[in-house]
Length: 112
Image (spheres, rainbow, N blue to C red):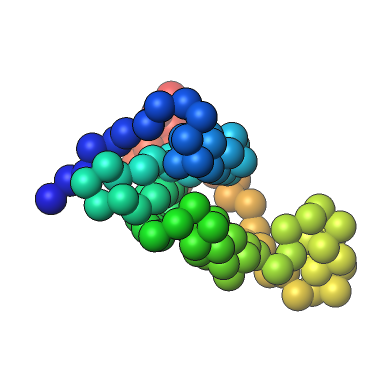
């Protein structure tokens, strides 16, 4: 069963809360709406493949914040990555050679 996306008349608390949630979370990749049939607030994040609902705007906001906080990587800044690289904590595979840079061997060695 799908809930229609509704925005009640401007000036109601539902519309104000919905607009506030949209303003805050749209930049983070969230789509927020209010289900007229269910009376719940809903949020979806397609990048994370997550769908959340809450009985109030505050409840939904808390769920989004908890999810974002739990899925946020610990070392995301450039200085953390540089420090991890210097200490050897970050192991990267060697860079592959560009195509065509290997010496040709066998029957195809002279063909070019």
